Figure (cartoon, rainbow, N blue to C red):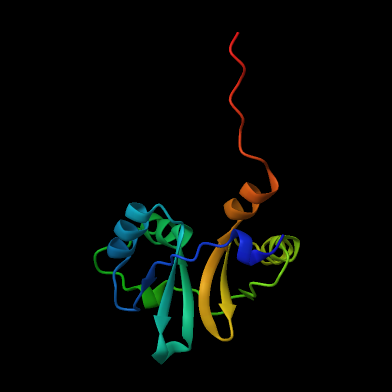
Length: 131
C-alpha cells in the first residue's frame, strides 16, 4: 500500500503570521494534528503540530501573541505519494515525528500521519457478536 492511499488530501494551510491560538482553534475544529505553514520568506513549506502548540503553552507563552513562524518546523522530511507505507513509517520512526507532508511534483498533495498508516494496516474494528 502506498502513501497516496492513506494520506489526507484536505490540508489545513496557514500563514506564518497566524497565532498559535488561531492554529489550535482551526486544528481542533478540523480534528487534525498538524497544519502546513506556507512562508515564502522563510523557505516555503513548514509544519506546525499539536506538540509545537503544547510546548509553547507549557513554556508559559501566550498563544494569542505567538506567531506560527516562531514555532514552525521548516527542516522537514517530505514523503512522495508513491512511497510505501513502510517507507513513511520508517522515516517517521527515524526522525521522531508523527506527520509527513506529501509532495507531488513540488506541490503539497497531502499529509500522512502515524494514525493514517495504522488505520490502513489494522482492519476496522468489527462489532462484537451479541451474546
